[in-house]
Amino acid sequence: MEYTEQLNQLLMNVPRDKFRQNANKLLNECFILKSCDDTKNCYYFILREKDLFRAFFDLLGYDIIIREDYGVIALNNSFGTGRIRLRLLESIILLLLRLLYLESSKKLSQTEQVIITVDDLYDRYRNLKHERLKKWDMRSVLGMLKRYHIIQNLDADMGNPDTRLMIYPSVILALDAAELNAVYEETKNKLKTYVSGGETDDAADEEDSDEAAAD
Image (cartoon, rainbow, N blue to C red):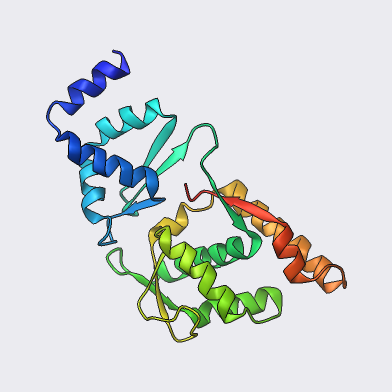
């Protein structure tokens, strides 16, 4: 059956305005989450009409990733385009958030949220880079990750060490295995250069960027 015929059949029992609204939300936002108030209704609608969404986005060259175990829906571009480019610092913070999520989730039930403090990130970053991250840089990176539904701040100032952060399970899908290895190798190489007295850390961070799968 042609995709257009399949789409028309699937759309017969679905309000087109509602489908259009949720399809745009899925396309414009990196992750649709069951645990996020802003995307919860969209999550359940897509789950209910997943055959329709799969057929529609397949025409556009996207695969829909549905992880009910994590409560996350995302898009993956089959052609490798539409990916957000992250600076090295952003990739490192994302990787640290992923590690903190995995460590914390082992101690919690499936219904419990993973909550950390910004100070947890400062500590991990300091252990990795042997220097303290500036508050302005932390606010900037966390603000970007919040927009893409990776985290949610529970207190106002995301540069404050005492501020609590909820880490969404979408952090698991934000970097694939290849990208994790790339971030690790890049960080290791930059540390070697920095320790040996080569280019400064700030200059290195400005020059290089990594791709992450926050589509």
